[in-house]
Amino acid sequence: MIIKSKFMVSLISIVTHPGNIGGGCILFSYIVELKSTFESVDTTVRNMMDIISNQWGIQSSNKIFSLNLVLRELLNNAVEHGNRMVEEKKVVCKIVYCSKEVCIEVTDEGEGFSPSELKKYDTNDYADIFRERGRGLLIMRGMGFDVSVNKNHVTAKMNI
Amino acid sequence: MEVRLDGRKLILDIQCDLTADRVKEVTTKAKESIKSMSGYQEIVLDVHNMTIMDSIGVSFVIGIFKTSKSSGKDFKIIGANKDIAKLFNLMNLDEVFEVR
Image 1 (cartoon, one colour):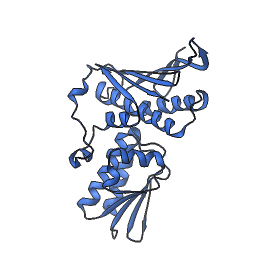
Image 2 (tube, chains in turn brown, orange; image 1 turned 60 degrees about the horizontal axis):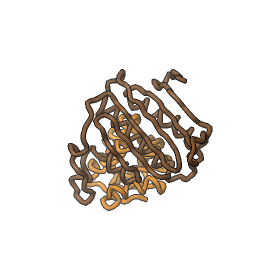
Image 3 (cartoon, chains in turn brown, yellow; image 1 turned 90 degrees about the vertical axis):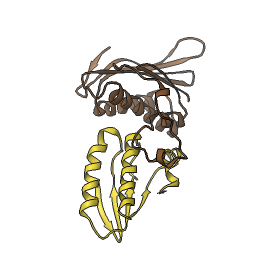
Image 4 (cartoon, chains in turn brown, red; image 1 turned 135 degrees about the vertical axis):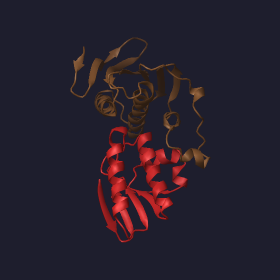
């Protein structure tokens, strides 16, 4: 199912009713494609959080906050750094909730990067605390997500 | 964003989430207010209406902090919910300025 939206977001697939795929796993999933603007990121995340909080049974307010924040960090990075804010370039975001684990996968159209290329963030170093940008990975890991990167494809997982 | 002077405090009441899509507009308004107002000794960011802030929102906060320090003013944040406060704590920013 593809739904075009005036908010530059195309909903590709959504499973909002629990589907038992065996082994006791109740599966929810949401896949969306968005253009590379911060406005589309905001619209996408608000839509996703509406589904997640109302239909997926995730109740804890701090887990909801963590999901909201990490989705934004992943999508902002894809839009800004992956696709260089070129609006027509697409970002695809997939979120799956199964057996108490949430897995978010984001793919952009950029060349990709390696985390080793990023300067490490030291929260005890004032120069780092006050740096202009570069907090995204720290925030995602601090929120309890395990983040891995494969070129232009980033995966973030957390046990809920 | 609403701006008001309360004694010697310049209060910037953010009234929205500080996310990437909104930061540019909020930054413009904040800078205009800081520049045009006078007689204050402290800049206070009121975030009681804020439910989410991303790393670009954090960069905005740091920018306002740097601006206040460079002009000899104090700076603090009020109205942070526990999730927002935890975010500042994650980056050790609550050791640099007060977060309430």
